[in-house]
Length: 558
Image 1 (tube, rainbow, N blue to C red):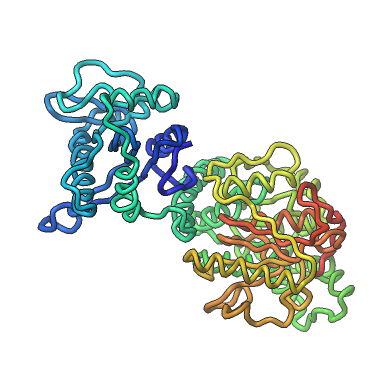
Image 2 (cartoon, rainbow, N blue to C red):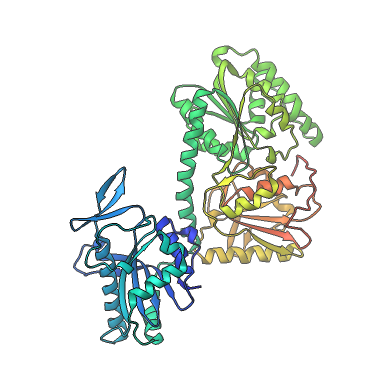
């Protein structure tokens, strides 16, 4: 394997042509050093934006020299002294000559070698070349300043043997082996000038940009279907964009002048939805919605203090009182549309209230994930509702590695994930709470050292903080520990269940132990799926990560 500078996950390279060449160059023998994305400075007198240039790849070999490679994805042609690329069903003239780009880069590197080494010449050969990774053949006559061996096509980069043969032919005859000169070139000229791609903060930003495009495309497809079907249940696993689609649908309905109720189970999710939507939207978690309407019937209605009584009150008594009020409301006071997120946590009887709150031909859109039914509601009853259903199958939130981890908790076929692989899910074992806390602090320190902002880190536990390994802690070392819905600087903490429906770039899933009634498969799935880019699971040494050993029984309180 060739030595790569910088050594990065090819998935972080957004240009598909450069990504494929990087992967191909990796397969060259270990005598090669491959430098990716070298930036050099042009004439100081030029405009600032024109001062810097970039070489896609530099291949260095101690017995040959160095080769500059300019990569051009897509189809290309050369005619009448100009280069053209094929876009939008036509050939468009390139603003820059790729041969000149490669040649300028080659001489710039040579100039820097002479300047930094003190040697008046480079003792090995120098060459430049082009790579067209999407093209399979050459027709016609190449320009005089481009060697046939200096053009890499699809077949060349798909076969490492052919690729190296072309490189060798390009350099013949070889000068004498001069490893010191090659290393001096790498250390004094090329390596110090390279951008570092594996800074996590930068990787996260790149990930956001790529997933936003995928999310936008999927949103438009699904929203178009809602125009044709005014009542629909969307079923999909965590990460398939249910909440984002619900928000966008609510915005479009509001823009049409319709009255809209957006409701969910989780209070924190309701707060997030309220922040994302115009003030004209009515946004409530379902129990608050019931309570508001029940108190219109009985202004003195109080929530019981006793936990058992409270559970019965919210599950059955309160919805019944709300229904009694809503069923008699004037038709003009009812909603044109109701959007339900977290539908898997709703009792089927609650939908009677929702129907009573809607106009006769109102729109109803329900988003639900059967796997996230941590409150033991019967999702099968919701599936039987007399409206059309659609299965969402694409993961629009998580990296490929996180999606792979989540698949073990999903029945049937896992979600299709088009996002980058990202970082592998990290598992860190502990023997006791003190050790776990120290390990958490260590991992936070590593992230901060890589430029990560604290606001990106979300700690999730099956327990409230007072019962977690962070009990009594206001800080983790020098970093404040704050509630997830709090403003300000710090690392955010929440229970898994309170954070359901939300997401964070980086999630620490802590306090994972076997045989816990509040650490079920569903809880681990919900907590893990909140992580967009990086997931670290802190678990007891006896917890089996290959197949969850947590009990499947669940309770409502946490």
